[in-house]
Length: 68
Image 1 (cartoon, rainbow, N blue to C red):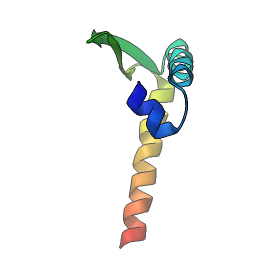
Image 2: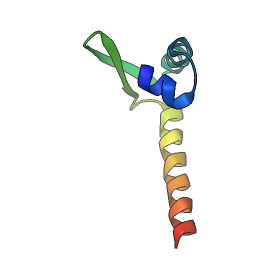
Image 3: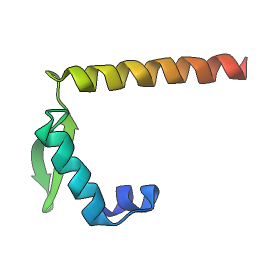
Image 4: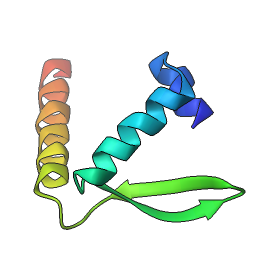
């Protein structure tokens, strides 16, 4: 989580707080631990996660259109 925290410019505890919220909402799910660090993925059953993926697609399409 240090890498994510550094990228976002926030404390690791902030990243974990947001992950806790996303997990409580069912957006992400804890999949396993690697070297003592928890790993997460988007939940396949989450409507919110589905909308986030859709929004990412729309955003990328617009960015590609701007490049043309």
